[in-house]
Length: 260
Ligand code: HEC
Ligand code: HEC
Ligand code: HEC
Ligand code: HEC
Ligand code: HEC
Ligand code: HEC
Ligand code: HEC
Image (cartoon, rainbow, N blue to C red; front, side):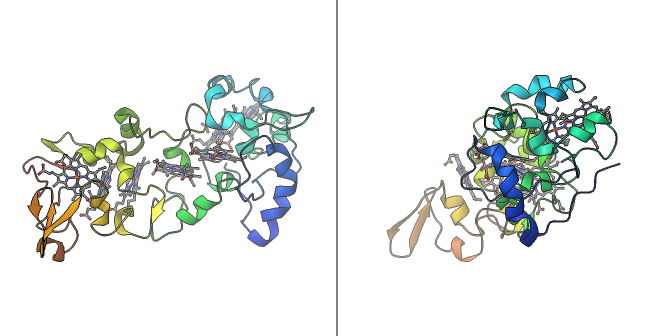
């Protein structure tokens, strides 16, 4: 059984939670964040990450280099609360020896993440998003909560990129006869992975997307060079990737100019 998370009520919990919760986070870079109360099991208190090792050694052993391992309670009585920063206070869970419904599992809802990354709720509310708020995907489909860098996609590392986006979107990764070198910079040079106002979660809905890297140059009145060719009449036809233009924007098997 999954734990039911409290319904989000901004007027009630934004600062109410910050007062108590803030104490535990003094040591972190949280100054620019608005905190909301963490989802948690009523009546439970913090026990510290060390306690988790008794029963979840597999998780605690790999946690040391995780982005979130640095979240530590401040003060002389301070505890390393890395695990509980997402899972909430765990005393009742430990007491019950791990019973169902005694601890928050953020795999069931992004609320646990929003308590510190509140801006992400907004990004996932835009018109075109990955279906996280509807529960079809979770933050951890793309982020590593338990080990290493939380952002799996290291844009200079194709292997990491593959594992984060291409595990679901197999066709955009090629291999292509005519690769579009743009993808080597990562899918996020063109897509906003959390959400966007633009269809296909694009960063821009017009040629500005492409002009990030391809320069346009006006050489004479009415002549606009892009990639060495006059594009003046093409640019009136629509986006760079609409029909008849560079439709195969991720790469092509037949057209070196990525037309199809
Ligand atoms: C006394 C043993 C024990 C301790 C200590 C313990 N757990 Fe558990 N935990 C369990 C058992 C047993 C389960 C259920 C079986 C499983 O899924 O592994 C469980 C399940 C969980 C789950 C999944 C719950 C769900 O509903 O899917 C989470 C998350 C979790 N533990 C986190 C923690 C964290 C964080 C700590 C330390 C603060 C901790 N546990 C300490 C025994 C323990
Ligand atoms: C950044 C937030 C975060 C932190 C910190 C964190 N977890 Fe988790 N944990 C998650 C998420 C998200 C899931 C859901 C599983 C998934 O989708 O990978 C999860 C799932 C679990 C589960 C259940 C696994 C299952 O198969 O259902 C256990 C047990 C667990 N965590 C233990 C821990 C322990 C122990 C620590 C500290 C060493 C820890 N977690 C730290 C976010 C976190
Ligand atoms: C208790 C507060 C807290 C919670 C809960 C939390 N985070 Fe974080 N997260 C942080 C802090 C602090 C950082 C450190 C970097 C920073 O200051 O931006 C961070 C960093 C990250 C980063 C990397 C940012 C970067 O620029 O490299 C990602 C991705 C991330 N968190 C995702 C998550 C996800 C997914 C969850 C829920 C499973 C979660 N966080 C839960 C506080 C939290
Ligand atoms: C479809 C994959 C995907 C999902 C789902 C996803 N993220 Fe991300 N996230 C990314 C990528 C990729 C980056 C790196 C962005 C970049 O390099 O431009 C990122 C960056 C971040 C960062 C650091 C940079 C920033 O934008 O602040 C945080 C924090 C973060 N994500 C939190 C979350 C949280 C919280 C969730 C769930 C509510 C989530 N992400 C869901 C792919 C995803
Ligand atoms: C866990 C699987 C998964 C991962 C990982 C994933 N996506 Fe997605 N993606 C989806 C789903 C599901 C949809 C929604 C499809 C729909 O609504 O029909 C989607 C939609 C999209 C769309 C819009 C497609 C359309 O037809 O409008 C784009 C663009 C996209 N993802 C890019 C990315 C990028 C970039 C990454 C890596 C940062 C990524 N995705 C990681 C599952 C995933
Ligand atoms: C140079 C910019 C660019 C890069 C880099 C890029 N995309 Fe796209 N992507 C686009 C454009 C433009 C569209 C819209 C195509 C359309 O509407 O016909 C798109 C559409 C998509 C779609 C919707 C289905 C489709 O193929 O039309 C998915 C899914 C997608 N991209 C995933 C990815 C993934 C995964 C990566 C990284 C491997 C990636 N994209 C890299 C520009 C880019
Ligand atoms: C991250 C940088 C980047 C972005 C953004 C980008 N490209 Fe590219 N593109 C390249 C690189 C690098 C090459 C290979 C070198 C060259 O031909 O300029 C290339 C090559 C091409 C080619 C093949 C040129 C030829 O004839 O050899 C076309 C067509 C193209 N891009 C179209 C687009 C379109 C359309 C967009 C926008 C959807 C776009 N590019 C966005 C970097 C980028």
